[in-house]
Amino acid sequence: MKNKFIYLAILAVGFTSCEPEFENDVDADYTSGEADFSSYVAIGNSLTAGYMDGTVYKSGQMNSFPNLLAQKFALVGGGAFTQPSYEDDVNNLGGFVLGGNPIVVGGVNQFKTRLVIDASEGRPENINGTSTVEISDLQATAYNNMGIPGAKSFHLGVPGYGNIAGVALGQANPYFVRHATSASATVLGDAMTKNPTFFTNWIGANDVLSYATNGGAQADGMTAAIDNNETNNTNPTTYGGNDITHVGVFASVYTGIINTLTSSGAKGVVATIPSVTSIPYFTTVPYAPLTAQGLGKPLVPPGSDLATQIAAGTAVINQLNAQLYGPLDGIFTAYGEPNRLNLLSTTSASPILIYDVDATDRSNEITAALTPTFGPALAAEIGQAFGKARQTTANDLLVLPASSVIGTPNANASGNLAGLNLNLNGVSYPIANRWVLTANEKAKVASAITGYNNAIVSIAASKNLAVADMNSILGQLVTGLRVSSGQIYTANYFSGSATEGGVLFSLDGVHPNARGYAVITNEIIKVINQHYGSRLPLYYVSSFNGINIVPVN
Image (cartoon, rainbow, N blue to C red):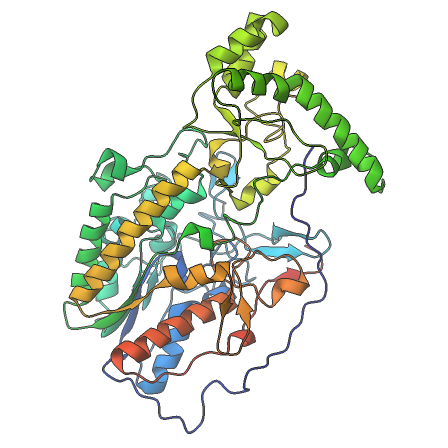
């Protein structure tokens, strides 16, 4: 009963720019002002590396904001700017292999090829092909762009973070492994060998984003990840991959990074951490996606009319209400939770069932109430499965990949429940913790981001550094960000050619596309011009590519 909740009407995409033809006026009086761009170094994570569409790939990397900045710096004395080599990405697919083989964990390739829109299917897919980017082809080179996808703040100073021996153990980062100058090198140490005179530092998103993108769950998808601000754990060596970094740890590490970068007098720009509510990874899938038509369409012959689809779905809803939703609603209501779960609607969209780690566990109450009907053994199975279940509300955020999971069979459902058709994710079985960021989890994320950003602004002020408030800038995308040309850009996910011109995010829903990185570059240039008295030109955003569409994948 898999539902397709995001329908993409793919048409030939094209748009014309209303902006001037030339970016750099021939007679412009450009100046570096108080800044010295002769050796520019960029520190950060995937947002600095030029990551988009779920990976780093050759043509995408060319649109990293540091590379775009460096091209403008070159107009006023900026020196050579280098990035990790992707010359081995001969087919422009991205992804990684190790020893010629994909890195597979739990049956899933951890470094897939880039995402594209398959026009024939109307959906995003990993582009067909095999990655040619080999991790073990070590470059042993420090680059000007030291953006390391996946890096958290405290990773930048960890020796061995680029040691290839640690990749299989999960102790090293493959992106840094490819170019670390030695097995014991640190990201920050390698960056400093470039003797920076100017820098950008956009680190910190992953200190909270990995928690958010995984729905506040650990790697198993169910167990709650830890907010170390609640536990007051200040030892990052004990943190799980999806745990939230303690604000105090972040501030301490960030201070050390800035002290190092400015140790020889370099000036620079730091960037704040954006809110998760400003990126389409969390705002695209509706909390209430279940409709009679959506539930009925997979059950009738292809090409069936709307009325037939709705009729089939209505029958499913009535059966679920009688068999599952009605009894559970009665139990929850009896114990003082009348709105924890309600009947599915046959006329409007209904929310999905989720597993909420913070919900009161009603396993015993469900078991007791259903034992007369199903017997003690089956009642206990139902109680165990639905004891911490509830329906989503408008305060919850379903993550983008949930769209392909809702309505599919849950592998953890028992055979007995599957026999009763009580095994479909979000429909007749609680979808796992990893697919939804609840209101409680959102609050933890928001609190951490506020703490990180307060630290960033304070530390920058102590060194008289410029601040690019990306939290505010990307937040404007929620209502519409108007650029100098008059074009309005939003935080919406791609939904067809009609919206393509206003889309700034790539198909992974987290990272910008080339056009989005151009917007970010412009915002940083504005900050540099204001803070350092520079005069650098902006990019014409509409000249950059948006979404990658292929006729057939």
